[in-house]
Image (cartoon, rainbow, N blue to C red; front, side, top):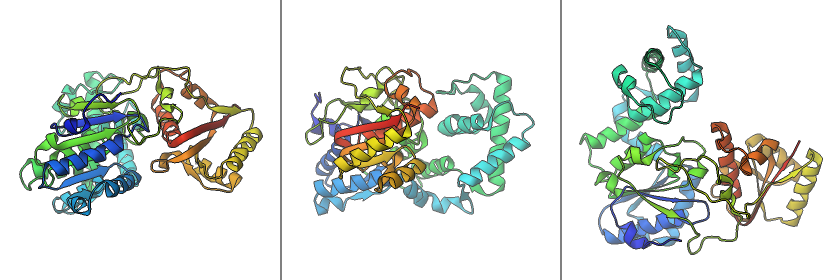
Length: 411
């Protein structure tokens, strides 16, 4: 139950988190909190943002329906990434933001230059992204003293020094090529306000899809507020994380964060769709607050439909498409979506693009045999690749307002 006063809670200082499964109305509540903030403070501008362009488009539509034209004039609706680039552009000088191929080439060169490498490239990249960039480490001593939260590979002091040497080679390669990383750009943008070069432009910041943001992005969102983190409100569902990695918000904000859980659909939200969030019952999954999600299992847990071979699967899916011409179909990736679009002679969307594609009826096709074990809870501790796949499955299936079906083959 939502046993709290929405308006009273929305006017308390942040940082605040609205955490909920799909279909409970967290984005709608976020919009209501924007409206409350506008009414409570007749002056000042507000930033409303979302991680993805599709998420931002959904927010823009909800805001247009909920607010007057006068209120909308006081809101900036923009994704964080282009906004951050605008802020820091004057400070970048000749430096260029590194793109994917640049980053891969720099890592390969760093490993070639390093005197010793005991780990695969993926380990160094994750150590850089999840430790050095998160904690903004710039010295060897700071790295050696770091507790490296979230990293399961233990390192002795000799290994730490070896890893640090590789990380510094990577930083040197970027600098020699006049490149800067997104994490560095975020830090520079935040320092514009924290060091007093410019005044924070917003009375408050409201961010959807917050499960995707990394610590540097979250700190920048807070720095954009006149009162710092007190003006920050986040909405998130850790089950829908596709691009980020688990972040403990209590560490990002030193424990100063309030969390509101929506456990039942709010007024105007669907309550008849299958409870695909039950896939997460008994699975170790982060809750954004330093703990694990607690999802009680239920006999009503929906189950996927698996067929013996490809022909049987295709026949069943064709029948579904004929029986419900308005259903929205998803597949796990772009290649599968293209194949199924040819089979069904209709649009089939990659699961990662499911945000904003809500429909009364949806169907996710092309599941693998191993997906059954993920969806039924047989795998209690999925690895990162399995978690990413399960998140895509959940994202697609949770778009169904009334029904959603998951289909695959068992061999």
